[in-house]
Length: 167
Image (cartoon, rainbow, N blue to C red; front, side, top):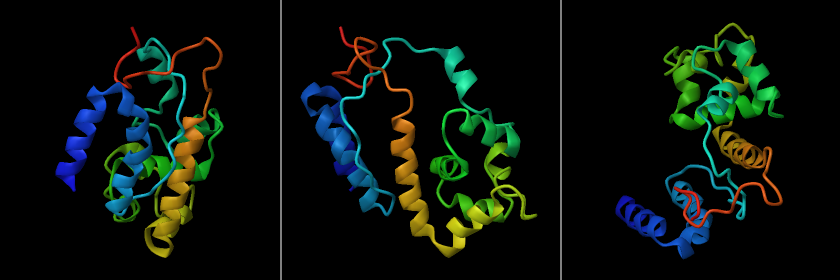
């Protein structure tokens, strides 16, 4: 499976015509590995430039406490569920790691303090009661995040190759 995925991703990146196909099939690879599946929407317009300042302003830093994390997510139209599931997206088994007080980043561990505050209940729910609900909520949050502040009209461009701006 890993070899097939590597082969497909390599050629899809080189062949602009396969980009829409890759976008639709990539979630299937994660689904086959036991991860969430969600439909990737096509035709999103991307900026023609990158902004280090925007990234540093909009993404929560790893030293944020729980209140700061939630406030940051809410300022982008996201909620507590989005905060927990999207934060868990960078590691496998995050909920159980947090409950064991082994969060990778300070901001991760802020999601579970073990005192019943903040998102403790939600982390326990995803970790022990219903891990499949985590997968469906993660998928919904990824789609929600992908639809934030879409560029329209002549702003940005639909990339022929997702790794670089069009010529």
